[in-house]
Image 1 (tube, rainbow, N blue to C red):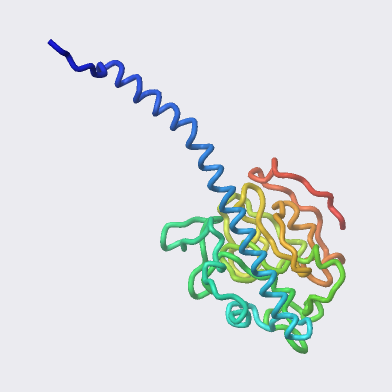
Image 2: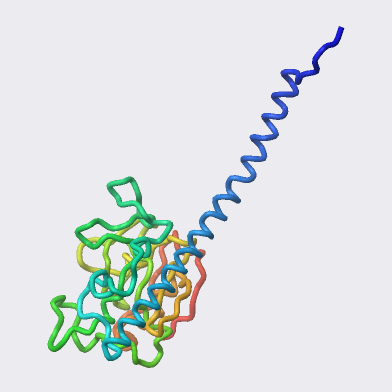
Length: 246
């Protein structure tokens, strides 16, 4: 009599075990690939923003917008609302996201990128924010060293940041901005494996190491501003170091 061949229970369990082992090996690699793809897509977004900012300044005598939000001034220069979000950060805190992978609330301007407040071109006197004097503002893209002046970048909590050299790093990885001071903590977020993506005033874009953030030229008086090289918290200890230029 013909007998149909079949797996024995032992053979089936061995196959299942092998599949589970392969999945355990592959899942971390797949997760890394996904994060790398999100970082690449985020950089592509910022390059699109470079183009939008470039077109805006070309039509405004080289000057940047005069407000803290870019959504309305630059609306004619972008169409896709997805450009407002880093692919790694599309959910709000209410939807369960946590820093550094959270988008902002509607009351702060929806999105997961933000602008360096010091590039704005507000006219005359001091700006409404007491710690953002008019003389510190870049105002225009037509400045030297634009490749070291932050413009638009990965950001958590706010849609703008008024960074000072004396700002201190977050004490732990998921710490966000507390109150209205130390706004570097909105920028120093571990969104792309010890880096964030950033667009600069010369309309270039590249990844920036978290420790490198303090070495960039955030405002016109940044080089002369008081502030020593930060004391790095434990979670940042092994991140890449950068020469302290001041």
